[in-house]
Length: 514
Image (tube, rainbow, N blue to C red; front, side, top):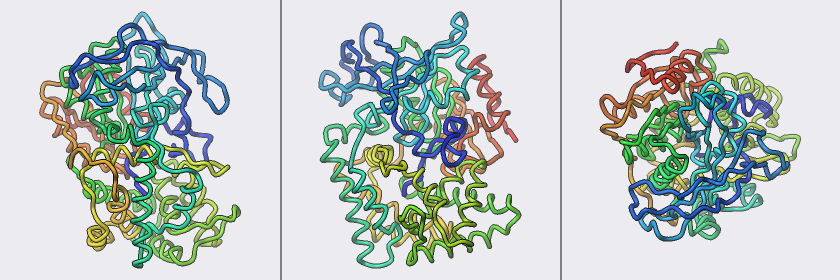
């Protein structure tokens, strides 16, 4: 259960029709279907410099494959060709799917604004049309552009297992193993997942890391005809934006990073941060409900212990296990608007002995639809994460983390400790680094927004990102509030970001929004 970087904040409105008001993993769903560009492939012989298709992109109206309907009359899709391996720019190319909504005030157009909504593994082609209303003010002067990063959805999306295998894993694998047999099954499942990725997506698997995606972003910038990149990165999109700024500081235009991933944390550090962040959010939830946070935590942890041996029944015939329950609890903590659904789900489980609501929340997070089909965002997320990090903690090392992680969070700590070992166990591709590089000397000012109650990317990481970007580059904005992502949730933050993007007004470093 990797909880890193789900998309939230302003895009919550895009998924109002889902089970809960917050944007769940399942909302990332199927992207619109972009046609292949007929332009020449990207190459200029330098893996670190911009190269893109010569000639204009072939923008065409695009529709969603599941219903044949277009996102709207203004939306167009295209594909930009990029090297599969940026170290071999004249080798095989792959297509990166794009979607665009032109600026509404063409005479005042400033250029294109590229978005990454997080994950990793979120489909920008699928999300942006659903989220665009939140960015109407920015759309007056910018073309809004979403993309599927390499290894995601329409851009050579990684696939690792089928629906039956995925369901079997969620049903049978204990994510906090208590016995030698459970631990062996846990580790074996992680290795089987990686083997499936290698079998089904082996050609792209070594090349789906964040550095390669950042190089693709520079090719997209050039293909769009922009001298500098204007970019809005949310959650994992902040890591991607920081990587871009490090690689191409001279091409940084106006860039905003919201719900920031800590660039100084390794894989264990991220798990430690999230144990802290989700526990903080859970305690804030209990306080908001007029309950003692310590008592609420103990009651929730006791519920999970009961589920470890006695899963709850549901009307679907499936059972709510401990592992699925903790995923269901995580889901509504991403946004304060989801807290009422958490109350209803916990009440049903504790008072009625039924697991329907928590299971529905877990299914939404895991990308499972009503017919039992699973999306592939989790596949892409795992492949990108494991391509990035060199760390491969063992089961013994995860076990050694348990006392500390239980102290950090009796509810989420054990799952996150074990996750460090299960996520990239036996991964068939070596990782690139321990922590990403985000220093960007000489870049234009970049807005870095941290929310004090953010569960998934805790506030402290934003300050570290601002420091890593460098003096005069990282401009820190603190949002005192709850949830994962501030734009569209905080009027103060939204106003600052709009003024920055539209008028070039850079707020003072250290500005606070309440």
